[in-house]
Length: 109
Image (cartoon, rainbow, N blue to C red):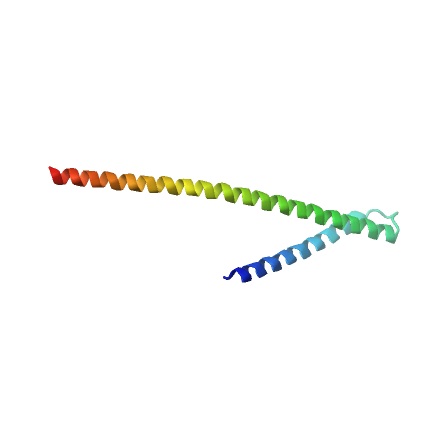
């Protein structure tokens, strides 16, 4: 899959996620204001609008935190992988050197 295709798919996924979160925010706002019978329609709409905005802000903050942590974990795992790869290479080289030394020793006997 090309870089442009992957970018396009990520953008689409982001828009779909945002749209779903907006719907969740509106639904939560409606549930929140339902028992507040003393609100006028204008007040209810204002509270719901603010609730939805706050909901989206909290979701965005959560997504940012998740992305930051994912990047940190990726960095940690890549470093660990590189260390393991170096150790494996060292063991293979050491094993190869040992086998070569044993072969030479057997040939010289």
